[in-house]
Image 1 (cartoon, one colour):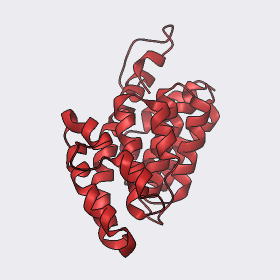
Image 2: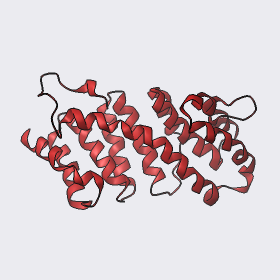
Image 3: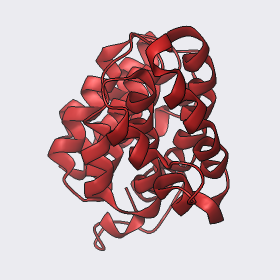
Length: 222
């Protein structure tokens, strides 16, 4: 969520303020697509079906373009010689490569600020059984709704992402985002529960190291 969502009547920025937490949450969108790229490398080796070998051969160039900001349009649409993720998703539907192409497309559109297209493609992604990739894609849908200021839908997807796979990487990350959108909805009780879950269940996570401020903030507002 961006800093424009802050109530102008609230106090000026301070350490642990809703403004700062809200502003920082957007950084995961930037990192999210890189994580998808890295996960794809392992995904390709472990899950790719033989019938989809041609799709796998096509996707590598789009993957290279996705890592370069100035070439992301080619990652989506292709370059005339190699297919982009959009064509791969359409032409090789029902393959593992098409599935991961949908995830890439969602992440790229999210970075461009095209939130409806991001949601469209991320929702086409089918779970693979990965305890990291599956909740990550679900959480990116939450990011798209959050950036669209549809905080209720964002909360639904962040909760799904946090519950999808209980692990110390994705779960506290999405619990933190869940707490932030609950704050935006002025649902301070549920925000407290989300933050408290991080503190109690994932004390070694990076999110837990900075959760006392947000936790105290929502407790004070009840």
